[in-house]
Length: 234
Image (cartoon, rainbow, N blue to C red; front, side, top):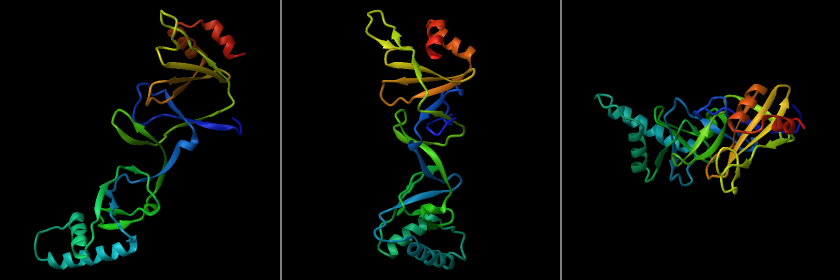
């Protein structure tokens, strides 16, 4: 497009109803997260001034002692056993906080691999650029990896589709109180529809359509097709 591209559209992976719709966000909202998929990783809390290499020395000492202690029996010690023994033997209070498949860490965080029974720094794992947002429905921070990106320019001109829709003439909106739609012409037979909401915790979505799909969209909203096509191409 051009050098003024600042916005990113991407298809969500957690399934908004129509797969043709995208979230529209600013690239500055994309953040780097550690990709922990396939690992059993915990964030270590109550570290004090301990560093990763020192902790691994303690863990190795405990694992070696356990190997000798349990070599003649059927007991299989696990990561919890190692952490508990480190706390007891070295007068520490390490606690573990389970990490999801994608996680944003600080540089000084230390992670515990439950299967390997070793400590790691966050930069030990591959990273993904993700969209990090508060999911109001589940009351938690959510990470999404964009699997398809469409770049659009900030300088494109939008046509507002808002009209008075309620009987008392007080609601200027599109498709219901607090909802708003805009259309921008991108290139030949390609348009961008953007939908926003004034309601809290909603996110702006958009889709790229051809002229036929745009006409259907306008008709479904009971908008004057000829009037808005002229405005969009003005």
